[in-house]
Length: 235
Image (cartoon, rainbow, N blue to C red; front, side):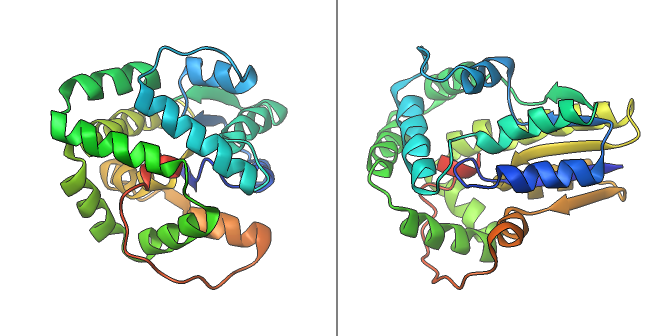
């Protein structure tokens, strides 16, 4: 049995993630982290040699999480704590983020680097209201949204989305061969891709929309067609 939790890294959903893990009682919890990112969450404020774009996106997540009354990545850290509290094993299922960004940047054409740099810089001024509009658009038009991202940032989508989907799916499947119940906590933008790659009948999914609404109640939002920055907070 596999349970997938689709989360967003800037939202105040840590308590809901813990509640789901405690209710599901999986044998192992896999989180979209690598050891270095886990250490960074435990010890914030450390130095990094990641590319400037990565640091800008991290700054964006930190600022936006503050607007939501949270800390960037708090839901991942809470998932690791909940796993330990229920006696489940913990697995890091993601690639090394710093090395991934460095490789992506090496492989990225100059024009795409410029677009990505501008997007990362302008993200520093994005409001939570704008994020809510963008998130609603993504949730209502996920396939189109991902196609637009691939058109605007093909290298980014290949390296940060598609290749990571393949890696995380492989690690989830490997865990499922060793544990009766596996629960994986991943950015909501990875859920559809991982589900397609898993191609199993014994999978249950919690999407970010459901997790947020369970924790706060539904809110009506307007829709804006903009695929520029989904990876800022969901990947």
